[in-house]
Length: 283
Image 1: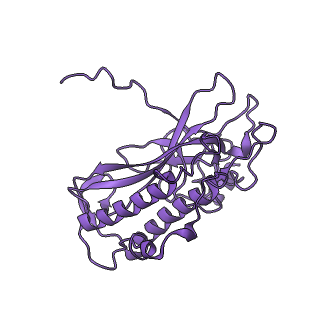
Image 2: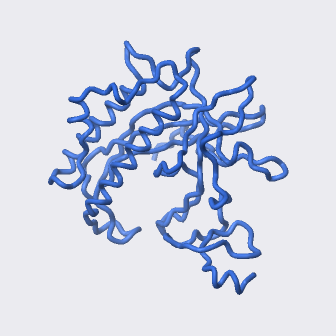
Image 3: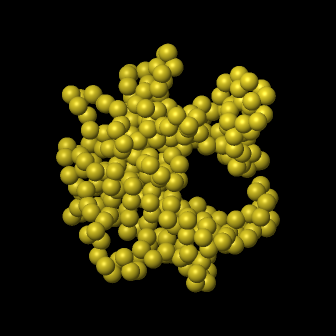
């Protein structure tokens, strides 16, 4: 095996909430960042509905804004992609099953809502901002019609439709020879935006990973354009981390998927997986 001398020894640092030395959260728990790029990659699938296909992934890429010279650069990306058949048993890749129609439609709606939220809320201060209402009707009737399982299609046909959709979104956001990118300001600098990240715990037994990421459901917002005052970054006015959203990554094994309840009394940084009855006995 020939070693690659150019390969990185460490991965990029990911986003995480910013705290003061006293443990207080800055910026209401969200992270100030610049829009690094919007691009598309492909991921080769060997199994499932997209076996043999290079599945497109639209990425919204961000770099944290350093608050002082010692701050390291941190990165995060929002990945938007089609989801095909899923494993019957998570962690075992030998059997796949078709997802219910409502789940496929939810995936499509989540993808579009994230893209729309980014265009309307992260890029709002760009002089090059374009309106979704200006998209031609013929594009809406063709490119913006994504396969939801109601009509039988092959994996290749589904991938082709998503590729066409992502290519149009990239053109809409990044522009071309006649239209400038929506991700820059009048001076050509990258737009600044608040990004909300929350803990994510992989339920795949092969991974058992913990990290911060932007949720795939927009809800009350995950992006907010930064408008500086006297060159200072203020606080976001539209998005924040709620009191019910725990920001600290839990040590040890992640709680099972779907676990509900409250944090364990007397133990710091526990995920809310203890029932209220049990919590009452422990307090």
